[in-house]
Image (cartoon, rainbow, N blue to C red):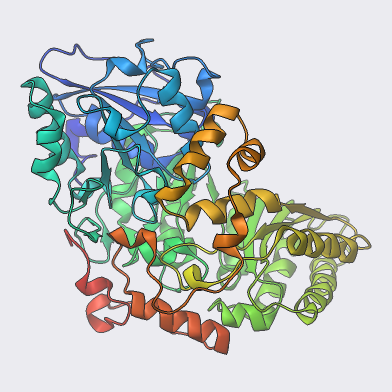
Length: 557
């Protein structure tokens, strides 16, 4: 652990950060595109805040762009205007945030096109979208950090400080760093830009954690703690499973150090494969002994055992989340989701037996090649789930009280095998959701929730487009709505979403290289169509496999 050791450990809890004097320091506006309640639950944004705020060379202030409500954004820490900072650093997680960024810059009087900002401020962007597909917002951004912040971002920021405080031209600084690992300066850097990833092999040396605890956060009054990063299973729809390779686990003692120093009322464990962490039960037992409450993100059905559930119930956990992922066995196999129906039903049975109050089940709809038979199978499986719930309850008065089936639409993402796939239309998605609601209606205690098909299509359009959609983003920012921007610009979702891409078609997001090879992804797309599984990442690490290209294609590893 690098940041959490000794006096460098940084945790503010409910305290308001103290803004240091600017003398000799680079003023940095660390901007979160959404509201404060989401920022307070955003581990990546808080990790960057911690990295910069613990160093004497930066004066970092927080901005929550959607909380400005159309006015010029001001610092949450000092009320200083956004335009007062030579560096505006953005954390980009969701494509829909692009419009909020442009709206805030215009409200602050900062030109939204980088060509109209020949001098400072410098707009820097990082986060998952910077190494998934940064090109839609590239006309606005001076410099993208492509990769993990702990793999060299601070070094780039130090050089920026020297340049800005010395009065050097911004363009000179950008040319100077354009070829550095993990840096993409649009129009200047050689491409593709390989991701920067922290070393450590299969160990996660610097797990992310919350700097702040807030009752206003999406996960209120909770210390969020990263347990693992990446996932070995290679589900073909999941961008995180590809761009965060190799999968890495945090060390038990490192996490204990964070919790002891923060002493929070509740800990939320975050990870893409929680039950794969070999030290999970040791850590949960330690939290229980301390009297610290905890919550878990989604867990695998085959990780639900009587002992595990008994422990969770005795610890006060009332809600469990399981991922079914697809409506049928055929589609789960095609998606490379390893799930035995017996394991899932047994998990439901155990949840009812141990009186879990609420079971959340995630299911994705709108798969390429899906048929009516896939949803007929889902209807039968929902009846099986209901039966398993009753079996687990037995003759007791209480069992599993509520099951929520949460439906999300498949959004094909860059750097997954589905980057070649067509996306279901709004009409198809609406019909599928309506059908599932009809099937679920007779089943007592089963609630259906679903995302917006328009929102899913919008995300799909932005995620697989390039800089040509910038005018559409700008229209959405200025008009205050995506549908208004569609009417204004004539943007055509179908041109991007409604056809399968060719094997050799060039993609705008290939200006970055997150490590996984295009050839591997193409093979995986063919295996999806052939309904064939691919083995998970071997526990021994990349040197044992080298199939996907990550071992050879990572800067900083």
